[in-house]
Length: 133
Image 1: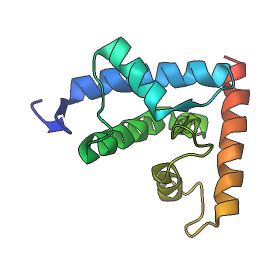
Image 2: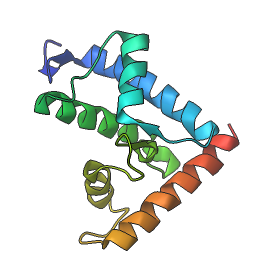
Image 3: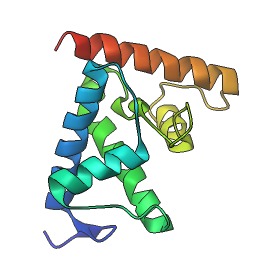
Image 4: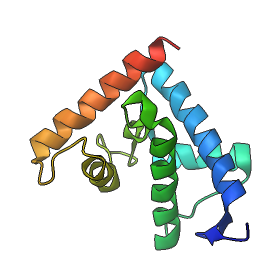
């Protein structure tokens, strides 16, 4: 069980994923997206782990976490990570679209307009799904 990824144990990744899923579900119920910065603050407050976005490895680790969130919630047919965007931006990050393509939810080589339509569809789907919960 000593295997670590990005310096974090599997148990810690599980805790981080639990908190991220819960927080993002809260945001979806409120119909409000969030930023990487806000998610990072929540993780720090609830788990005691803070990612340093100045470090490429920590940016990659946050991307890994969002991938774990999507894996855990894939049964909804929606990508919960769609709610997370860059501070002062109104769009998901490139990792979101890459994962969507890998999962077969978005065609490879999608145009910027197609990506935007996909992202908005994910947001609307998340809001509708979590409104009922």
